[in-house]
Length: 451
Image (cartoon, rainbow, N blue to C red; front, side, top):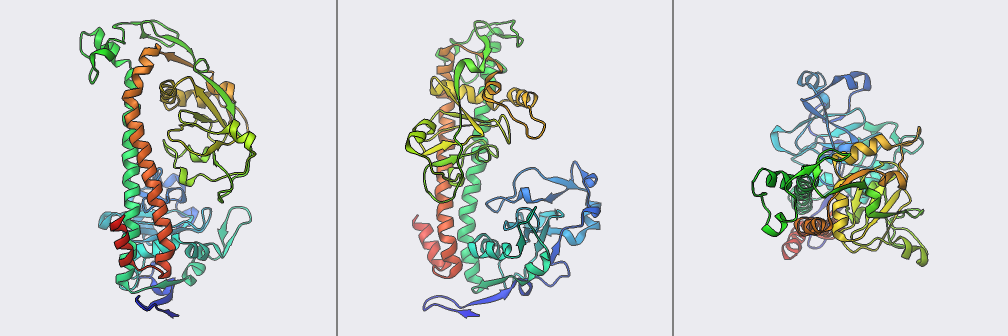
């Protein structure tokens, strides 16, 4: 098939089999389970790509498992390198990942993945990656999948080879890939910055409320680092015994429940269409330390219930099921409610909310939530259990002083998330237009430059 526009290049349609590199393993499936069992895993070695590592950008996420170089050589046909595309044929069918990192990049396919190494004289790997991210590409990946039980493809390699891909000339492919890739790169850069900001915020919390660094510095006759005199004066210069061990003099041990109220979430079905407010779920808070609202679905809800369940800045939500104990804080105004597997905690002020958030994200609370879970089929924590934990509570003037130290970091993080949401919207709007030839890559580059 050929297709052209008055000002644009001619497109041709190929099967994926026609686009593969000249290699016996250019299109391959991961090793059978008997060839790579979990007892093959080692602490350091060649990372194994699994479906859980494929993300919504070019970057692989979540923890890898590893195999030895010797095992990787034994399974050489299942190795993947820079520019190779990977696809689940079981489980998360419709997803696609791409290996990046230059000539040093080397990974191993898991048993549930297959790969394509393309002929770069015909097809740009990154263009193909975005093709499979498009509605048409996802349809091609899903059309032969069975949804009975665990989703799977009966003849995965045969189906993959037969997929038809429309391609413009290579230079146009590269222009399109560069535009979409640059947007993904900016989103990924923001995410890395957010992780740094989150670590900085948790470091401050731990210093003030777990390690009591300002108190210990004063007790040793030293000036607490990074604090003005007024803030230093709020901390005592000695510790005293408590049920939780040594704590600053004048501070107290009490239940987390003493600093907040609790409320169970709303039961509703999530839908992608904007039929009502966003419906925040456990899956929206347990993957990272901030909420990416662009990924949160919507729901229908009567107005009287919406008023009762609407989220506001400073609200904390904690998972009671699915991933009990995972928490998030609402940091920007948003038209959203929270789902039934979440419990809302409301503190008396934004300063108190951020102190509570620090406790909820701490190692101590993670240990508590693991120990407190119940349920033989599915682990869970009810609202009473979520807040029935002993914590060290500082005086209100210390809590108030904490806010200006933490808020700038959290505001930068929230602004970065908001920018990434806008970038993702631009990327997703450009994607079908670029891949259909409606907009040329060079035109999109001009639009991106203006933006």
